[in-house]
Image 1 (cartoon, each protein chain N blue to C red):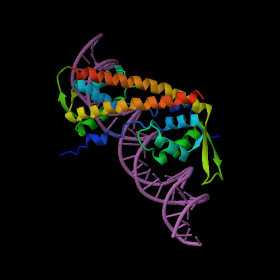
Image 2: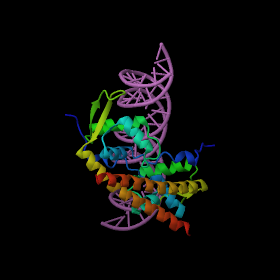
Image 3: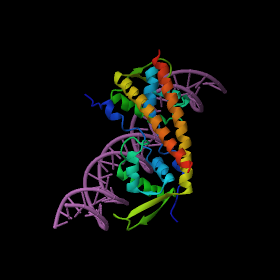
Image 4: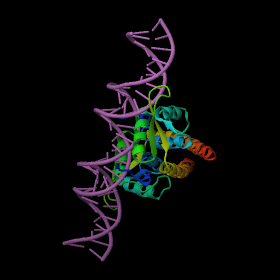
Length: 122
Length: 122
DNA sequence: CATAGGTATATGCTTAATGCACATAGATGT
DNA sequence: ACATCTATGTGCATTAAGCATATACCTATG
C-alpha cells in the first residue's frame, strides 16, 4: 500500500511567502532592523503567518549583497547592537515592480476563480 | 567590488507558479493527460509563462501518489499511449481549499498595495 | 524505406528557497 | 547569579523548479 499524504498537509507548501517584497514594503516606509521587521511582519496582514526569523535575517543579508538595501550598525540604544537597514533606489524600484506584479497576480487569481465558477455551474 | 545582481534578475524567482492548483482546476472541468494539460496551461491566463514540461509530469505523478488524481493508460487513439488523469474527491476538496486561499490572497495583495499607496503619499 | 517532426512521458542534475533547530551574545530585571 | 528579552546569525535537511536529456511511438514526405 503506497503511503498517501493528506490534502491538508499539501496546502502550506506551495503558497508563496512574499517575505522579500514585504521587507521592501516596510523599509520603504521607514528604516528598520531585522528584529523590528519580524515584529512588524507578524502584525501585518500581507503575509500569511509569522515569518521564520532565519528567513528574515538571511533575506536581509542577501538583499544587502544585491544592493536593494544598505545596512549600518547601531549601538547603545538599549539592548544589543542592531543592524539597521535602509532601502536603496534599486530596492525602491524593485518594490514598484512588485506592486505591478501583484496587480497582475490579482487578475490571474480572478481568472482562476472565474474558470472555477464557470465549471461549477455545469 | 562585490558582485551585485540586477533587480530584473531577481523578479522571476520568488513568484509562485500555481502549477499544482492549475492542474487541479483543469482536471476539475475535464479529465486530461499530461501533454494536453501542458497545452491548456500555456493558453490559459492563470499561470505566468509556459509551464516546464518536467514540472507538469512530475507534479502529476506526485498528485497520483497523494490520491488527488487517479490515472489510467489510454492506447490506440492515435499517437503514443497517454496517461489519463481524473480528479478524485480529495483533489476536488483541495481545489476548493485553493479557491478559498486565493480569495484570501487577493485581500493580502490589496492590503500590501494599500500600505504602499499610503506610504507614497507622505 | 528512411527519416524528420510531432506527440507523449519521464529521469538526472543542479540551484535556490524554506523550515526547524541551534549558537551566540549583550541588556535587563529579580 | 540567573533567567529572560532583545538581536543576529549558522547548519542541516527537505522541497521545488529549471534545464537538458532519454525514450518511444506515430505520421507525413520524398
